[in-house]
View 1: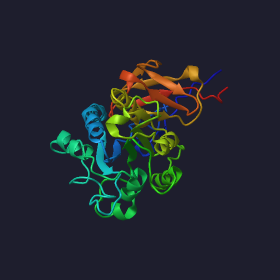
View 2 (view 1 turned 45 degrees about the horizontal axis):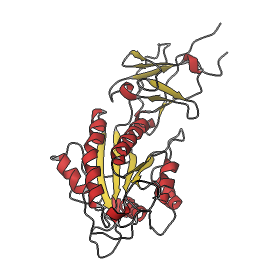
View 3 (view 1 turned 60 degrees about the vertical axis):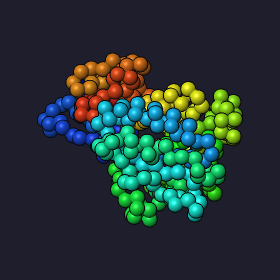
Length: 320
C-alpha cells in the first residue's frame, strides 16, 4: 500500500536561514511552519544626468505603492541611494546620498526622506557609471566607514536602477555580477541572494520622446545583469512606469515569498496550508508549482503574511 508522507518545506528563496522547526519529536507530521527572512536591503542606483528630474519624480510618486506592500509583509527594510556620477568634482561620487545614509520604514517623515534620496536632480555627469557607483558603495572599505550599517549580513540585496541610457562603467556587466555573487553568495539550494531590477529604455522603439531628454539609449548592460539575477526590466516611458513599478513589485514579493521544496513531489498530491487553512491551486489567487525550480509560488491575495505558518504536504516523486 502507499504510505503518505508529510514532508518538510526546508528551503526558502533568499531566506534559508529563516526556517523555524516547531514539530514535536513524537509527531508523524513532519511538515513545518516556515517564516521567510524579513531582512531586505534596497539600493537605488539613479541617473542624475540631463533631463532626469521628470523621471525621478515619476518614480518617487509610484514608490509608496511598492513600500506599502512590503510594509504589509512586515519586512525589515534598509533603503539607500547612489547616483551614477563618478567625477572627482562631484562631492557625492561613489557615496550613498543623504543623511543618514540609509532610511527604514520607521524613519520619521519616511515619504519626505525617501523623496530626498530619489529626487536627486539632473546636475550630474552625462557619463552614467551606474555599475561603478554601485561597486563603490558596496565595497568593503565604504561599508566599514561612511556606509556602515546599510548592508546587513543576512539580508536579501535588491538593486533598483533608473536611467535613460546604458551603463558607461569601465568594466563589463558580468564583472559586476561576479562581484555581487561574491558579496552575496548563492544559498545552498542554488538560488540567488541578490537581484537587480531596471527602470529604463528597453529598446529604441520604446515610446519615450527623445526630445524630452535630448538622448535615449537602451540599457543593454543593465538588462543583462537583470536577466542573470532573475529580476525584471520595466520601461520608464510615459504611463509605462506605473506598470513597470507594479511588475517589479510583484517580482520582489515573489522572490521573498517563493518556497523551495527539498525534493521533487508528485504534483497532484501537493497540498498547501497557510495558518492552518488549505490554499487552492490557482495562478491568480492561490499557489502554483514551478517544476523547473521545484518551488511553490503564492499569487495575488494568497501571499501569506510574515507571521503566518506555511505547510506543504506531498508524496515524493520517487515514492512507490
